[in-house]
Image (cartoon, rainbow, N blue to C red; front, side, top):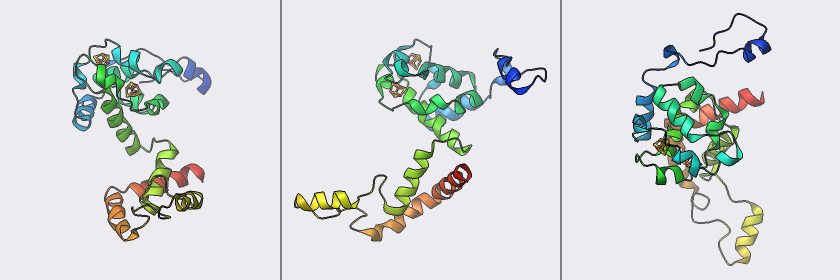
Length: 193
Ligand code: SF4
Ligand code: SF4
């Protein structure tokens, strides 16, 4: 919660009260994180093994342990609006090593899913949705690769939706069920104008 006294915006930001208050906590945040991540986030006792394992931590301000704390304390807005949420490579090193058998990686996945429902998502994810909707591939084939495949004695397209586009309607149906393409198009349009 931001507690300031109506100073100009820049100053207000500087004076932002960084203490935590009970009302900053969203009571059911941790439960929702646990329900979608299927991991026991509330068992975290902040040992720091996860951050010590993380390849993103030495190169950025991303701290998986901090996100675990936010999950436990219910700091939903703070977690979902932090750009560092998108720096996890999902390498699963933290999950491999957590002494409490927690999967912090899956906590991050859960928070990313929640962030997307608030339109908080890097545009590359949206472009991937668009590519899959168009071709069934996040990284579709192209003419340079088709020529290279031919040289190797392969078919120009692999035996996927590229070769069998009749399967595309079924893929689109799944994406449409979750309104993924619709939301991706809307957010891209809002960002790019
Ligand atoms: S390794 Fe596990 S218990 Fe330790 S801080 Fe990370 S999530 Fe919590
Ligand atoms: S899965 Fe994500 S948070 Fe865990 S160690 Fe790898 S990059 Fe870090």
